[in-house]
Length: 546
Image 1 (tube, rainbow, N blue to C red):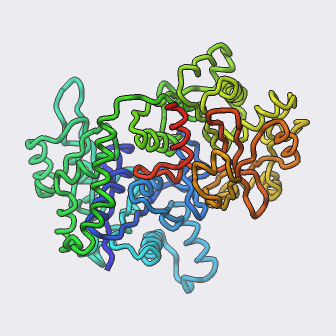
Image 2: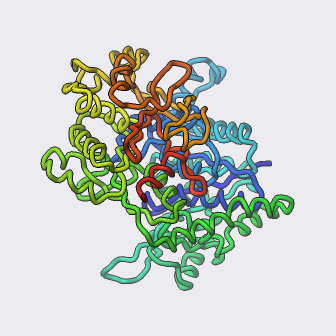
Image 3: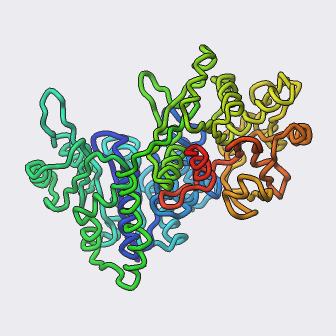
């Protein structure tokens, strides 16, 4: 029977529940078990597609088209597998399903109540993932913290599962231990309160992952053990480290994997142990060694607008792009240095664009709306003319086409109809089926989403990078390359390097006389892995190093 590990947060959000969940999964994989992971988000939103990236972070897209939380990306990167839409659960999705069932008389005329029917629907979804994945271990991360009102129903679902199958359910609390500057001492009291709050929901944590700036010392371990009713050896130190990819190795220093197996009365699967070790933690340790020892830098500028929040920079808006750059840099044994460049600055001060000459490469990632667009176009033009390696992702591809049309083909007012509906040169236009969605304001979950095939044109940079003709990549967009302008753009030197064979949609554009200038309509960053960087990012970094 499958085992369930619920991972919850204490004290504050953003302390690494997602990577902790993924890391535990990676460790269990190294012991020979099949693992999958579920993310529960306590938002009324049905999915993450309508959330502002500055507030919520990146919107990750699965193969089957679910717009979900960025932690799903962590699961895929750590577990090296594609996780599908059933593994993402939101409050909105659960409530909508229960109401639809009630309308369809699926409750047989009974009164439908928040408890037990909402928790029962959560349990049903968890068990559905178990059946589909056939996993030995199902990791379930509950977003937010245990003290939040909106999490109560998910905690109730976890409690009910434990009541029914106590030997198959384990609870892990990831809690933060602050070190106030004026005191200079690590404080355990917030974690004590978090555990008491969890107890009030009928749940006692089996393991506590103690997050802090520095490793946990013995006095703090003893105190947490005493006041939180957890064995001292089950309090795991989880200090800040240089790279998230060191976390599984760090956990294993406390023998976390074996502790979990012991609690479930399981043993490492001997038949597959050597194979799994070679595939997971041994390779993982080599990667961590490269991360720690790489000296030569490769400097990449990411030009966007979704990373400003007050006086702070929120890099989570582009977390998959950042990780894909890192994976590719480490592949070449380089230390990645990423600079955040606000495109609006190039509109206010055009001479500032010359700072791009100091970079080894430029990325313009996905995005929407008008803000900062002209600044991005200036940056793309500078990268094209000055032979700076360029990688455009989704919107970054569309803007590269607009820049080429304006400054190479003489279409001075070329634009996308998303920004300028009346442009005389709509080189980027909405997809026909999107017209009614836009008109009727049906925005949630209606874009071109998920994996679609792409046929690469032989002898192009993209074809050489992938090493094959037929590929599949994930999409998230409403607008596309307008084929009415395909011939004129090609005649002036734009290379169409990838086509969707089903609808003849342009997926990849390139330039020939450039060290690396590639724009893709899809999001290759979603498929990059720590031990297997995405081919396009790998070759982009190779060009940047050169």
